[in-house]
Length: 129
Image (tube, rainbow, N blue to C red; front, side, top):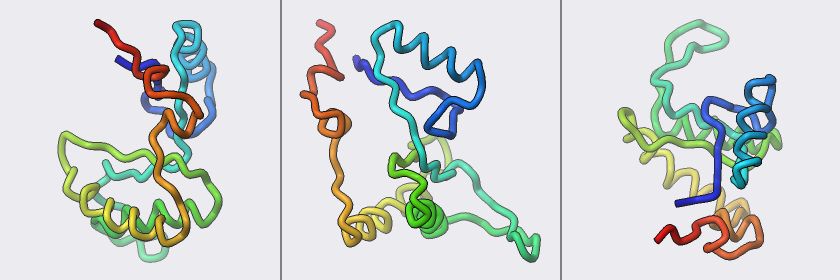
């Protein structure tokens, strides 16, 4: 069990609508800690359109990693959303080594959520038994 909550379908780190705010407020009332995201890797999309030519561009691990890194370059946050299924996961798996290598080279440090929050693991993952 966990006390962490990431609002579904919210691709911004702050709520943009009353309904989004309500889901976060309800989770907080129930004792959950809301974890927002600020860098959506959009790894669930299989293709994009080129802004200049309008041609279809098929996304792969490198294009996912490049998009995430470009958002970091623009200082658009560092909580990255990636998905683990049900389909198309191989592109996400392909992106991870590229991201990890580049982010480490840039001085980023990977930590668990409880480390980021400055608390111990049992606070966010309490025993249920």
